[in-house]
Image (cartoon, rainbow, N blue to C red; front, top):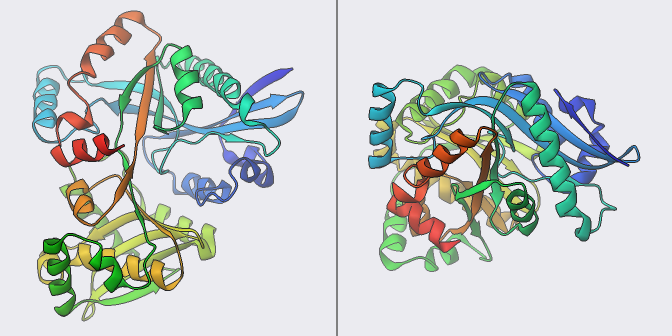
Length: 374
């Protein structure tokens, strides 16, 4: 007999059972404990579990928040949305219950290791049903799946069967690194990009420090984080200081913060998750006053590439932003999809109309190019 349950904390599920459903994941049970410890404002965490005769067979993280429909829009689309919001305050904001996480790279459901491929779509249907029931208990009409991989036929099949609408989300940039040196990587790029990066490398650079504890510089890290966030067109969550310290403490050797110094001043930082297979760039913050003289973004990029090559790490996962630069830097892109449905038929119909105008590939040409690649 299939039963489902929703929990307010990942600690309600055994660490070994959760991690068995996500073999090799960097964003594992310990990562979600760190996220809970951080107490990110305006989010409430939920964890969905499916049992078969009492045995855990599938799990998924979820969250509750108030969501601005134009969150992933930039440029002219963002300006239009801001005008609408000024005319009708609250028009574009809805209560949201979403499978996935605002601080995870993609929405992955996990399945116990003994579950065959043929059962997974059906178990996803049970997870969606559990999410709908949990959302109803909170009085939330809008249910979504955030950043499901485009190539995951099980998500698409279960969501379509449940009557969900679909639209492209922000693609994830990845850089395969089958190179023996940074110079070999640079040789794979276009001529103008290669020439530009080599010129930047010849200029004086900041001092680089790899840290697993940043308590002594946390105020400076947060200053850089807040300044970077203020310049960003796309933002969803605001990370508190405890997020950075909890991730570094909880994940131990699988998390590091790279600090960039000019003399005694911290000018940039980069929070990274890593193992022997991949390096995941979680957040890069920098001081814009030093960025031009020291090429901080590209220095950070090449520092990460160099680390991956030196440690035989095959994949650099570089997130969901800065698509124009990432196209130049040789990235490939993994497509993501958002699936959503509102229980109110009228609101659901309005969302079907809104998605024609407020979608990421309509506002940013570089992002549209990245999405088309997937």
